[in-house]
Length: 260
Image 1: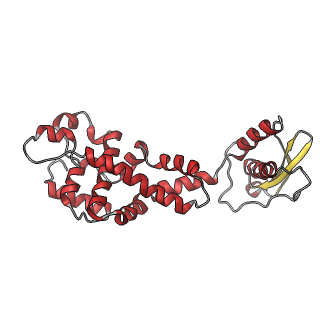
Image 2 (image 1 turned 45 degrees about the horizontal axis):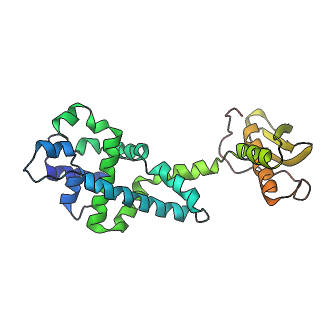
């Protein structure tokens, strides 16, 4: 790819992104590192640093928009760290590598020899510049489409991580703060064959059983029981005031055999 002409670089980028740049000059600038400009002075090239600056804001806006749509009940303080988990050097460079962005960059000889095409910081900056070029050429709508296409895995990863909240840790923190007690878990029963075993677990705070739950692994049952006990604490209720029935087994995939 090092021998590609400027127009060819933009064409390949369009194919990989799945979009057409209304301003190919901006697309080429997004692919141009300052080391290239330093070695080609007087040839009319501009580096991508200004586009990188704008692209950071554009991506934060677009990803933030999608997060607000996915999690309409979340507050600003909860959404901000979620966005930061997506729009960061590691996440952006991963997407840039998936697009093969490194091989399309115009780099100076020194940067080329030092492995610049694989540098995470350089790749993340270039991806931000690319999104800025799309935005300046056609506005926010195509940017949102590209976020949906290329950031879907990252957005889904955040959603899945939220679904795996560590309720045992949250319960322990809340119980120690409010009651000065440490939760204790014990298996009440096990049922079913080994490959489809169902565990019933109860969680106790002091002498009181705060919740009982079932799960396809001990870990699942403990997490579900902790979630129910935490809800009881948050409502300011005592055991016996709410339902004492076991929480149903949540719909899940294969049994989670991760050690508790």
